[in-house]
Image (cartoon, rainbow, N blue to C red; front, side):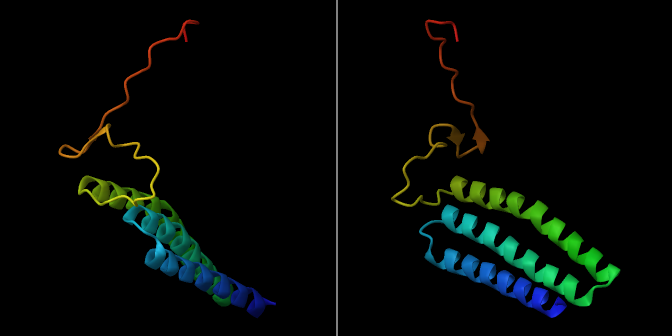
Length: 127
């Protein structure tokens, strides 16, 4: 039973890692590639590490695996945000099929500051 669970976790982990690699190769722009690689690679590494924990089954290995997974889950979104912001600041082009650039008029590329949108005036009901 343990071997089956390890095999399933390894197949799941390698499938997500393959999906991340395909996403990086096939997506049209930096921002799409970043999203595909961050989510899929984190799931792939997490499932592979869980397979390691199940295989060895010791408290030390399981503790290390859980700490590594927690580190990945906590740092991957921060790294993706930093990469996305750096890409946007340096003028990385958006995919030509992108519908909207919500930051175009709100983001100062020279200072790196995000300006809040102007509040809309209240309507006739006072809201």
